[in-house]
Image (cartoon, rainbow, N blue to C red; front, side):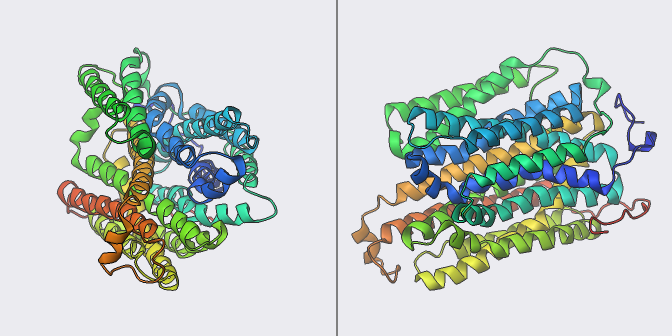
Length: 503
């Protein structure tokens, strides 16, 4: 029997339908599609708003950073206060964040930076509320194969949205509508999501009611992650070994030590580290962090072809069309592989295929025509790999935690996504910029870079920034091999098929 304070799917007549599932997808996609378009359109936005490149890079990563910081807190609050309530708060925050960005003034100095960064922070808080609460609702109201199917569509909202963001952002930014239209459309879809999700019965954990909130853990976590992200994203400007840079590192390390000290001594911590005692949950979460970190491939590769080859944001976004098609086409394939083989093999296969794709996009030493072909193939393989990985990983994480910890566990799992994305993007962009300082004469002496020799520093920086993402994928594969068990899933009773979204 579930310990949930409210009836579960098996204890009530209310059942989610496909319209409700579409509402969940629309709520989730507001971060992965609309908020993430800045990965591709930030070069144009920088020029339009009159902001520096370092500020633009911070605007890209800060949303994932704040999502990652607060997502565990929001997941825990969803268990206590209600998953539907926290989900709705997240959707309203998405509307507010998009409104701030859409109304950001141009060339207004501090006001421009405040509106842009403020909107991006609110978008991060929105994602922190939406992702764990919607995952917990899916766990609560679906079972067995129905839950795996629902998680596949949830993954279409997240992984699929991330696959479409570069193309969509480029299309909007180069059309007569302009880049601001991205965020007006986000507002409209948020309103539709609220309409489709109305009437959802509340769901929360009776076991989590009461108890004091872990403010010390939350504050120390925020300090550690903000200091680390600022150091990574602003390193090229402040100096990696400057007193400011070293100070940020010291603050991050001290705050992290304080955080772990608090979390291991409390009965009701903001981050339940005991969940990591389950190796499957730990492996799924760690690999999720690393594969989301590989999103840095997008900001480096797309930025490189815009600067080095003069492609527009739309033209560069078209390079990811195969990524979009592949990830949408293979997410449900990953679901079927999960049902046949269990989570481990499709997670490894997907990670390996994604790694091959990233390797192809790192070949910046080629001519631009050759690189475009390699990038198209590489992004397509990247999409196939993530499609194979998405549902097995998500199901492995959620299936190995108790119902009372569903929101918190979903928060930890999605914290890994957001922090991986934030740190991966910041680190890739920083390496991209830092490696350009290499002496061009030294690079030319290798005889590796063909074609235009005036931009070899830029192309070398791109290769280094992208190869960092390949390293993260390799580590993810090792983590999966060590932590996720080999056995196939136990046979479950067949659940009557639910009509497809297209029916």
